[in-house]
Length: 455
Image (cartoon, rainbow, N blue to C red; front, side, top):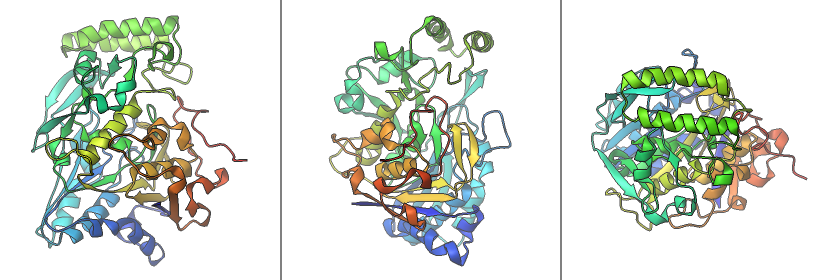
């Protein structure tokens, strides 16, 4: 039996650090398990969602995009209490390839969090960007790369080989984070399924996951499971979608047509040139991409592309593999038969995102925090509470499957919700549609992810 806590009625982020008497007990139920999980002398990694500093096209909107600083700070406070003056707390993420980490850190005052939480303790507290480089983009095309400090402990390749959930995939022509499919194919092919992981993450004793609750164009939802993508630092070792349409065992487009064939051909031509990251080539291609977008159609529900739809059969495999590595890989990246680190998660749904996630979401003042120690159960609960059917989300439903290095030992029937909202208390299967928060999905999932009334 797995219990997931769902705290409702959080009016603003300020009350997380300065709670009223009314909400203090509920917040303690959410955050205090961290101090009891952590032991003196350990290294604790705290992994928020720091994907970007703002919503696409709206530099002033960011609260619904990334994990709020108040949640990070309260989690750090609890970890420091558990460490009792001995150990480390490391706040880390590998944001989207073209994101500016310094801007993100300023948004949520990471320097201030480290300074305040360091007062009166000998626990070492740091925050840093795990990426080796930041990509410079123009019109959605990578034109250069900026060298970053990266993970001070370096990186490690973890090869799941034929134990990867990609082994059953018939079409192995994957796209990673950019146009260089050859790089992605070096990591994922008939023999290998390699992910380049952060050594800081692999070296930790306790992992605290702090995802942001949003719909996602590739996976339907981003929550605990999807947030682990930020522990893998070479983004082209992460297959995002597969070339072609379902009739060719791909998921780039829902259907093959003259338009999609033309677009696929243009993309292959561009890919062969863009892999050199030469601005003299990349800038003109960026302009050409914008022009062809006007001809072939903007990405909407009528022109879904690049795996951004409910038929994506790639990203869930990437996400499951990464979570299996997180739980079962030791510090040297060797997969073991038992979990190698402790785990706890708190989902930021106080101001969540809805609509075209993960980057173009509208703010949704949901007022909830969801917490527990089983990421699969949490994601099933989170999906349900926002009005999505977890059985229609491959990342979630496939995580219940029996496999080597399983992500959960429970079934959906084993999940129980503990909540201060009466009609959320009890079995997951008892949540009624009219008691959910009715989030709007990404357009590529609209009509294919929502819960239906139970008979």
